[in-house]
Amino acid sequence: MASQIPFPFIAQQPLPPARSAKIVIEHLTLVYSDGRESLRDISLTLPNRAVTVLFGPAGGGKSTLLRAINRLNDLTDVKRMQGHIWIDGLDILDPATDVIALRRRVGMVFARPVVLPMSVRQNVSYGLELAGQRDRRRLSEAVHRSLEAAALWDEVHDRLDQPAASLSGGQQQRLCLARVLALEPEVILLDEPTSGLDPISTEKVETSLHELKNRYTIVLVPHSIQQAARMADHAAFILDGELVEYAPGRELFVHPRHPRTEDYIEGRFG
Amino acid sequence: MNARRQRQWTQRAGFGLLTLATIVTTLPILLIVLLILQRGLAAITPEFLLAFPSDGLRAGGIFPAILGTVLLTFTMTLVVAPLGIAAGIYLAHYAPDNRLTRSIRIAILNLAGIPSVVYGLFGLAFFVIFFRMGTSILAGALTLAIMTLPVVITTTEEAVRSVPNSFHVVSVSLGGTDWQSVRRILLPQGLPGILTGVILGVERAAGETAPILFTAAAVYLPHLPTSPLDPTMALPYHLYVVSTQIPGMPAGVQYGTAAVLLILVLLMNIIATVIRSRARARRRW
Image 1 (tube, each protein chain N blue to C red):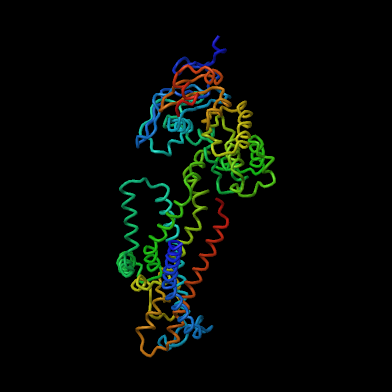
Image 2: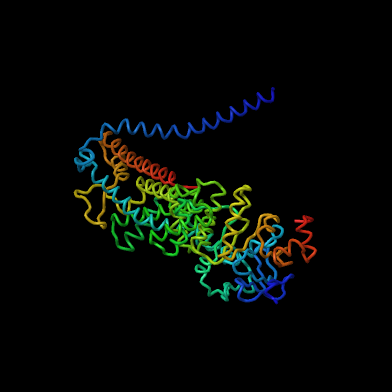
């Protein structure tokens, strides 16, 4: 039965059962106007409430793919974008899509922790305030809940009104995660979220992600193959803008099907 | 050893030159301020500040001129601040990078280079005559505003640009609109720079004579202006008149007027510095 093998071993093969699919990417092609890194005909189905890892050499289009999922590429000069990205059946690349609402449903954590120039509390409640939430009690509940979920509450609960920039790098990155969680999104995109962090902070972030995946659909661009292997429920190997292989993490990192995947995992290039 | 000594000497000579350059640029300013204050302060009495001129401007006070300058700069600020800040934000954040935007930028730079007397003549033709405002505070303030706009626009643009773009990207990624980025991040973070620009512009305008010469200023008025469409006396113009146009003028009046103008401008400068350093202290990144 298909449920035992919910995912195709090789890309561009049958899609998983519809009920477990959260994001369906169909023939996505993207070219920047300066001819920079692009995506070529990527089709990928990301499962609900699991961690999908997009990995591969730098400059291969992982971040571009990630940024397409919440239309953050709109801020960049994109020359051409074709194909579809469906989230729960809604084509988010459709010009008529409400991008603001989309970005509330699909949160993003960047490689470099960018805390906003305000207090810890204001950083977390920022997104909700943008959405028009004014109720102080609700905001303060959301701040507490989100910081707990990002495993940061214990460290900052007594300095919520201090500048966020006074936190350590690891704390700042978890604050960025909490900021996304405050909006109660459905999907969380993470672009090398631990690339600037020490091993202990990295472990803390990874632990929170492990807990969060029970409630959220997580798409992660890892900062190392080791992290990819640790975190992946499903893993997609992306090389030069193309999807080479997509499979459950256990399969892909143990028995890669494609020689290029194997070469990359074993460190022969990249 | 020798080479090291030579390097040290070069270094010392370099620093010496830089120090000298600093002194050369600061010295004239210091001298001007000291000279004017030394000769002018004696003339500044309560009567000088609060009374009307008398005896063909040779005696009495300069109150109408002080009030006129305050009114002119205040009205001008009401016009130039919102307009200039809005334009600066537009150029920094919204304007696409195309030929139109580039020509707007060049136009603004050129505007900053136009001699102030040309602005005065433009104000005369445009506001005083074409819009029938007459010689009035309004016409003078608008002329000053146009002259000051480039400074405010350019500094606002710079200030907004200096805020890291990553803040904007984060705000957008959290479901923020462009305007929310401007309103909640770019504007508050750029505020110190923006205020500096506005106050520097206002300060410069407060001391200008040429733009108000044909548009607002009167040599002498027996009463204070009662509406924006009344002409007014103003400090820089008064200074020009008492220094060049009237024979037998006591030097005290001239230096006193100059000192009052100088103090007014310096005061604004200090306020600008205080506001800026306060806003900087609140900034967090």
